[in-house]
Image 1 (cartoon, rainbow over the protein chains, first blue to last red):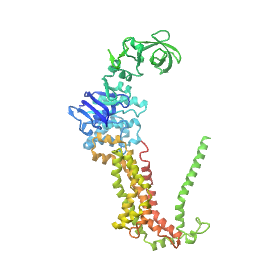
Image 2 (tube, helix red, strand yellow):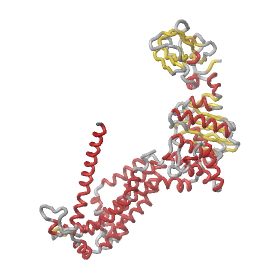
Image 3 (cartoon, rainbow over the protein chains, first blue to last red):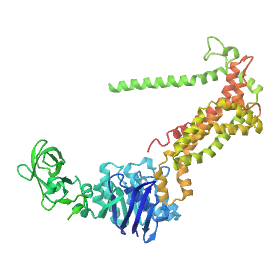
Image 4 (tube, rainbow over the protein chains, first blue to last red):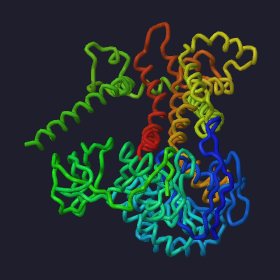
Length: 334
Length: 276
């Protein structure tokens, strides 16, 4: 079981408050992603849950038991690090067996579990190699193997994919998602990559400067961002945030329109502009349009067949009902 | 064509490397060669390189005149003793500075290194007096302590650098995996630090073995190591180069052999942590 409750948890380093008091509930079996720009405190928050950092205030509860002052080893959590953090002097088998050995499990059970994990993670062929002889993806699998054999009440992932190349990242993303479906164990996953957050999470926690900006399912965040920060952070390419007179027309300080909610046309529309850059991805084309009379460059997603080049004039029309409105404090106006 | 150029460059590099290597090795080679010459051949002009009457006479004279084994044993005792004592002091020091650094850690390290910049002769007098007062003159124990102290900054620095290479995340992973302090030390830290400790040990042993200032000034007979053994052959009534060379060869042979066999360990230690 892996229900984790943070109650007014805060963290300061010296006189710098990194995380002001914060409440959060993570339900058993949930895949929760902490996402935010670098330095937003997401890793610190994960390390507080892990017990690798001491909280400066508040309480952490794991499965209904107060865990605030319990050392990391006794919290029943397993962690996968960004740098993999494998033991370089041990074989893959010994790496995976290490937590079980620490738990003084008997050898037969250790072997059984290690072999099981190796099979699940396709590591059987490398079981006697050292981490130095493995590729990045294989190392990450070993790190995951080391976490799953313990059958922890929750997994903590600290940017596990950021050292991998793009193709491998997509593959590992799927593997971790599958693992979650199969084990149905709570997972807390830290990333700065909103695509990872959107694709993997049951629940996303958007953090900014140590403060939770919004908690919700990926679609909730996409459809109803609570403020301009979340609106800008979730979604790729980023939402267009437009202020000034265009926003005033909608009774807002700032309006937001996602690139996929703007239609482009060669002859008619609401805003006239010039294409600064057209990024052709094949399936889609992203247009960055300027000279629209708006202060900001507008990004638009059109179909790959839309034939347009640098310097062409286009007409843009935001889809009705897809315009997000934000007030002076950047909060959403319903 | 491009390949030919590469090959040519390769052979030039190889030749250059051999020339430099030979230049560095030449004094040692010359010493060894001279040790097999007669005194007259040793100072012959022009110098004789290989074609002389090879003789072992110098070795037998040296062996007769002085007790090589006693000097050798003193050298082993001094180098080994100061190295072990140094490690006992330096491992915890470097450990704490690498893993629990404070604001002043860098300053302390620099200050320690700065003591190496002081000319040794500057403290000879006070240490000499201290040795007389404590009755440590010409004693192995006294010299072990002095050698340990003069090499301590280097040992601490080397170990500190090695320990620094061990990523903190691995220790955190061990903590997450349920390792207590004891298990962390036993199963994770120590095995990862062993190559570093081993090369520090070797280097320090070699440094202590070759140390000549303190070993010459603070010993007479009982604690005199091989450095004193060599020095005893440069006498005021003229230099006997062949015998001096024989003595030198005998003095450097053990450390040369040790260095040869521990080459791999030394290199491994020096490149420890170079790859992620």
